[in-house]
Length: 349
Image 1 (cartoon, rainbow, N blue to C red):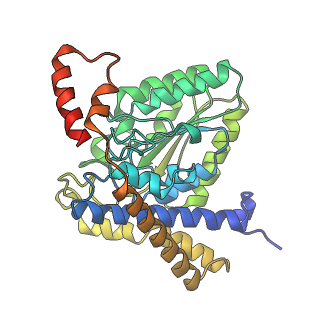
Image 2 (cartoon, rainbow, N blue to C red):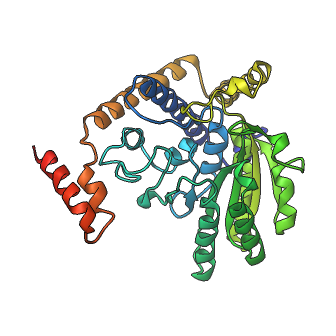
Image 3 (cartoon, helix red, strand yellow):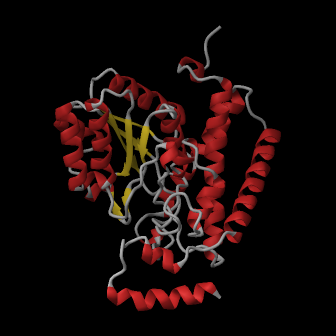
């Protein structure tokens, strides 16, 4: 009897169901965050919608007990797979003191959690790339069996940080995977005005590493190529550049971006037909692994989990202004002491 496609990749029925449920949870969390933003409850949202397959497919191909990930700001699917919870993500969105990413001190989408080996990112794009290469260098120097996995948008592949990181990794054959989530627009700049070559992966040859371009709406194809890259890295054969072709369904962020000004409705409709969740659900249904009843059950459970996450985040104390000040200094400078005492008095009431 012929194997199903996922079984040929070494994936069990249960594992592909977990992949789909994680994609679905990421989508529902994202949708709810947009509603919360519009209601004035949370200040900022950076959407993952349309890129869930690339994120979850890649993350499932890694070893979640030892590999390090350096995600970029859209990677809700990656960090959910690596162990972050809806409550933790909502705590970050609400900027609360219990936010595990930064204690409410950073913008949402700046993921970081030591216990799950999620390395903290920063606001300037692409800084995570040389950081990932540093982790990979440490793995090689200390002879440890872990891979560094870093993601970024195609706009970031035009930054100096990308070149320096990829060049260093290629020269020293480091165990790092560079994954570009190519959603076609660097905010409003189309890919045609970003690259002189056809694909981001065409750049790999200049760094002495293999480069692959895959369908980012197909989690199994992304899983396959990332798993091969991880196995290659563990064998000491160096880095890989992977480009996943996908599309962000909404604006760049909620902060004033209007995608109708730079991309057509026809293009949006074309990509809507390739919705990664719809595509993967149809695959599972065709294999007899999924049904409408199961879909409704999982969606209701996701809604309940998200409702509880929002309640927890909403009720959790805010970050104190005094903590924001004091954490920056071992000893407060003279010009801040008076202001600090004013806030401290207010917080005590």
